[in-house]
Length: 65
View 1 (cartoon, rainbow, N blue to C red):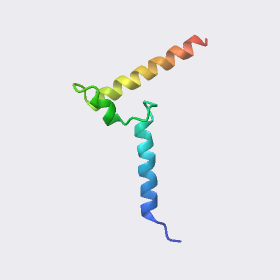
View 2 (view 1 turned 60 degrees about the vertical axis):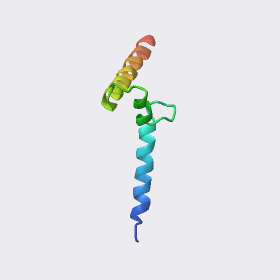
View 3 (view 1 turned 45 degrees about the vertical axis):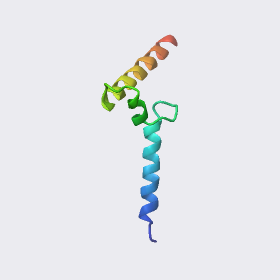
């Protein structure tokens, strides 16, 4: 059975694209988000975002206790 390498590559690219857009839940890519913060690197924006997400999650779990 012959496997079409291009179809696997496209699926991987599609999955990668979905991961790029997932964090902000608004369908924006990191590149678009980073354009709103011109003095910050993409890494700095991501670190801040994920830090805030972690803080929010801790806050939500402590409320239920």
